[in-house]
Length: 297
Length: 306
Ligand SMILES: Nc1nc2c(ncn2[C@@H]2O[C@H](COP(=O)(O)OP(=O)(O)OP(=O)(O)O)[C@@H](O)[C@H]2O)c(=O)[nH]1
Ligand SMILES: Nc1nc2c(ncn2[C@@H]2O[C@H](COP(=O)(O)OP(=O)(O)OP(=O)(O)O)[C@@H](O)[C@H]2O)c(=O)[nH]1
Ligand SMILES: [Mg+2]
Ligand SMILES: [Mg+2]
Image 1 (cartoon, protein in one colour):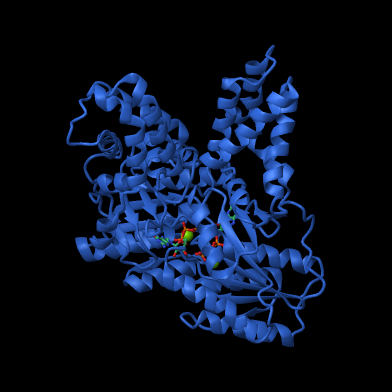
Image 2: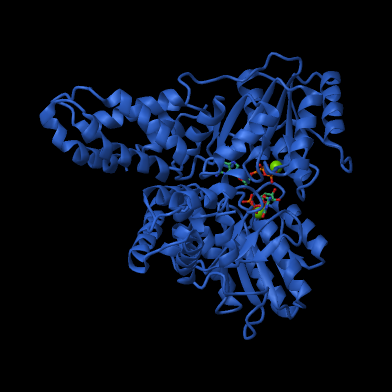
C-alpha cells in the first residue's frame, strides 16, 4: 500500500545527512506503530529503546534503523517464545492432545478450528472436533461443514445442550477412537460476562475427568483488527481458562494486528498461528520476523 | 478512567489556574493527555490529533471558573466536541419504499446476520412492519441456516435459494417475492468481506447497483482498532452507505472507532448492538458514546432498551 511503502522513504529523507535519528523520524515511527494498534505504552517503550541504542551506537543509516526496529520488536515477541515454531506439530507425549479454542464473538474460532483440523490431518494426525458452541445460531451446522470438508469426525449434541457435556463426550470418544488431537469449539463470549466466563471454566474442568491434564492447550483467538480491547480479552480469558497460546485472524486485510506486540509485552502468551483467509489452507504458523516486516510494507 | 483523565488534566493545567485563563503554553501537556486517552480508546491517531487541535482552539482564552476544576472544564470541552462530532441528533432509517430495501455490509464476523435479525424484530414489533430476511451469503459455512434460525427466533420469513451462487439474482428474486407477498421491508444479509478483496467488493457493489437499496448499512465491531478508518472509507467509496451500526457494545470496549468512522465518512451511526439476543438493539446516542469513549460509563443506554 502506498502510505506504508513510503514509510522508509520518508524516514530516509528525514535521516539523510544526520548523525542521529531526529524527532521527525521518531514521529513517523510512532505513527506507524500506533496506527498498527501496538498501543501507546508499548510504542513509547519501543521508541525509548531505539533512542537509547541510537545514542549508544551512534546510529547512521536507515537500513540499520530498520534492523534495530526488527530486533527490538522481535525481542518483545521473544519474551513469550512467539514465532519459534515452524510447523503444525504436536507434542509427542500427550495423546489425545486436547486444544480448547476460546475468544470473543466472531473472531474466527470455528474457522480456525476447521483450518487446524485440515493441517493436523495433513501431517498425519487423527483429529476429532467437539461442537461445544451450542448457543449461537447454526454454530453446530457450521462446524459440521468444516468436519465434512476436512473429513474428520465431529462429536455433537443438539442446540441448547450443556457445552460442558459436549466437551466431556468429545474427550471420551477421542480416547476410545485413539485420536491424536481434539479441537473443542466454544461459543463466542465477551470477557466481561461473568456467567459465560464461569461456564468456560466448567467446560475446561470437565475434560479433566477423563484426561487429568486436559486441555493441554487453551488457544485464545484474537481478531487482527481489534484495538486496545484485546488486552482485556487476554487478561479475562486467561483468568478464566489459563490461556496458553494465541491465534490472530483476518490478517489478510489491512489491519496489522499490532496489538499482539503489546500483549506479548504484557502477558506471557505465545502467538502460534495467524489466519490469512477463509479457506482451508489459510492458516500459518506465526513467524515474528515476517510479522514485524508486515508493519513496514 | 474519567477521573483518571480529569485528574491528569487537573495536574497538567494546575499552573494556569493562577492566570484565570487557559493559555497556549499550559494547554499543550493537557492536549497530549487527551490525545493519549483517545488513542487508548481506539480513536484513530490522526483523527485524535486533528480533534485535539480543534479542542485547543476552543480552549484557548476560556475562563477557568473558580468553581470548576480546569481539568473538568477541559473534559467538558472534549466531551461536547466529541458529542457534536458524532452527530447531534439520533438518525432514523429510511422506510419510504414499497418495499423498503435494506442492505447489510461489513467485515467478517462484525455482526451482520445477528443485526439483520434484530432489525427485522425491531421493525416488526416497534414499527408494525412485515419484513423479509434475505440470505445472500453464499460463502460462509451454514450462513443460510444461521439466518433461518435467527428468522425463526423473531418470527420473520427468510428467503433463501440453496445452491444459487449469484447474490444479485437472489436479491432480485427476493424483492419480487416480497412484493408478491406483501412484505414492506426487505433486509438483505450479505457475506462478510475485506475492503481489500476486490472481487468481493465488486460483488457487493453489483448487488447495490442492482437493487438500489433505500438504506445501506455498514456494520462494525465496536472493538475495532486503528484500521476502522481504512475499511469504512473503502466501503463508503464503493457503496456510499447511509448509516453505521456499532455492534458488541455490551462489552467493555471504549469504542473509539465510532469517532474515527464518523470523521472519515460523515455518515450517522444509527443503531448499536448490545448483546447476542434478538432484542439487544438500541438507538445510537452520541452523548452516551462520548461518555463511554472518555470512560465515563454508559449504563443508561444498556438499561433503556429501544
Ligand atoms: N478474511 C478472513 N476471514 C476470516 C478469518 N478467520 C475467520 N474469518 C471469517 O470470520 C467470520 C467469523 O468466523 P467464525 O469462525 O465463525 O468466528 P467465531 O469466533 O467462531 O464466531 P462465534 O462462534 O460466532 O463467536 C467468518 O465469516 C469467517 O469466514 C481470516 O483469517 N481471514
Ligand atoms: N455480545 C454480542 N455479540 C454479538 C453482537 N452482535 C453480534 N454478536 C455475535 O458476534 C458473532 C458474529 O455475528 P454474526 O452476526 O454471525 O456476524 P456476521 O457479520 O454475519 O459474520 P459473517 O457473516 O461471518 O461475516 C456471533 O457470535 C454473534 O452472536 C452484539 O451486539 N453483542
Ligand atoms: Mg464459532
Ligand atoms: Mg453473517
